[in-house]
Amino acid sequence: MKKTIIIAIIAGIMVTLAVSLLLQAQGSTRSIVVAARDLPVGTVIEEGMIEVVQIPAAAAIAKDTLTEAAGAIGKTVVVPRAVGDLIPPAALGAERSAPAEGSGFLTVTIPAQDAAALKEGDVVAFAVFDQTGGGLLGDFAVLSVAADGDHAYVRLAGDEKIIVHLVPFLGTRSFVLVRRW
Image (tube, one colour):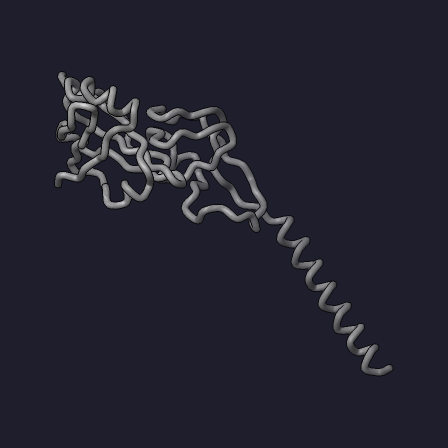
């Protein structure tokens, strides 16, 4: 009987402590940056396009998620975001500038594992395939690489004539991105 009372008292203390900790965790919050509207690739973020919201401190989110709007203002969206989406740094790139005469920008979506070795400054080409064979098109400079789950968005700069030749291959996904140097 005495043993049962001691066990009941210990169990009561443990339940009280657990409830207290749970209530404490629910009361504390932290700030995160989310999209206030849909943000397609290429959008330069301005005030009003994002907002800082409070979430429970115990919520499971990526450690590098932005916590202040200043970390996103002026950056270019390289991974599309929908209203309410978190804004991780990987979804943002440098401010977009106009291409030089005869050059253009291109963003391609490829499997994330294929982009793992790519980094800003690399030079890549497209190995393309069709009924007549295939070939290697262009030397494109990698401007940014952003992974989002199973996909990666690779932003490239290159000759606009080569970009025009690439369009049919991009539409049919009959290409492989090859790292040149």
